[in-house]
Image (cartoon, rainbow over all chains, first blue to last red; front, top):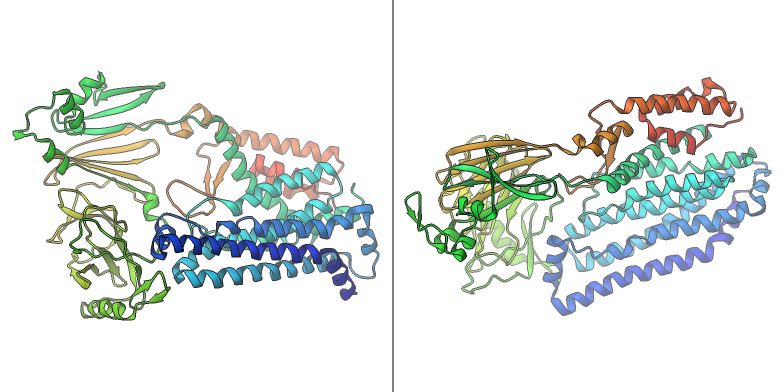
Length: 222
Length: 412
């Protein structure tokens, strides 16, 4: 049963996942092409100076990439489920309804984590090639909320999509949008240090949120 | 689990609303609050201020007498010396000292400290300039140093450690009994300064060192700090009169200077500073220092003579945002406000502030009533909604939005 659910999710998401991850990798590559280009023309120590003291955020090209990936994966995974209320078929399977949903969610989280890990590893590897550990460390503090935003956007999009009543769908969307802004506050590199773990906890908490609208869906609240 | 997930969503929504709603409110209705700009006149021996009142700039003295721009500038020859020289009205002498534009500008200094200068992510890597290169202009070095388990120089082009230079500096630091790692590194990391004085480094046991590079060689001097004196912030300065290296703020919020060449710590008689929240401004001239500390709705100005003795002081208060019409209305709507960024720190976090007055209680109670009506109308059981009512009662408009966005409808 688990195998078939995973296979169904894989069929829905594979191309989007692949293409978005490749685009993400290209964006990471582009960040460092720009860094290299600047260094070629203006010397490395001048670029380091800008990064350390002038708040030049070489990594800012990453900002919305995890968000877009999280959003798109949620949409391609859950919109087909509510089209013609196909999800009701899943609810008729001989397993616990929440368990089936959480398996779908677990699949989504797993592939997102895989995609994000790949982007992060390449990003860290290239950062370490160009910059000292202190610069890489503060860059990581700054990109962490963006990756968390990708996960949060995934959970909240699932919540919005699975809600059957448009009025509430809009309400959920508004609340989600206001919440997602927490991850994109402007600031210096490293400024998110005190908030990151709190955002991580909140993201973990909302991982369960989709079960709420799914519950409403299957109880016929529409 | 479905109920738990609902409360999680309610919680997230309350959090998001408590940031977004006040932000939108203030974006729409906030009016500028103009703090006065206060100066001490070495001619009149009194404080003078420039204020904004009803959109107009007014220039007044401490008693409230108004002055025209020209009259005002004549009262403050040390602040407006260039304008007065241009007008031909600069006095020949003041307090028995002949006035010379060059001398005036050499003695002039201006300094600003904001709480966020202290509460900020630190770069941890710094450029060590050549202090005596024999060149007219300073040059940006090609490497950056860190002081962790030793002093290391990292070459930017290759991103590798310059082992020879690192060992040379580490050896000298070791000879001066440096305790690794560095707790604080303060300097002026820019080539746009008159000369380089290197860095003031506080080690892990609160010993202070002056670290420079002179003709490619390390210069490390251990500074004698009076017993028990430790600092939470050091701001280096580059003033033309070269009287001191830096302003320092001690753990007990005292304001110190560290004098040039003799390394003496002098505490200024200024005890109004709260460095976590305040902005500090210091204007120096031939005769006096005007020291001003400011926080919302309050500022204290003090005049010191050139021997750093207190001459006069002046405290001013004005309406802060909460006391304006817009602030009063806000206090009826929002029980608290949450922000992710505040002016006093460069760190992003949840900064919550409870509304000072309890005006919001009315709206909270009203919303509880509305919620009871909603529960009745939707024919839900009251005892299953007690928690919702408590949430609305405490968090007011935020909770009301949250519990109605995510309806408490369960079928069990």
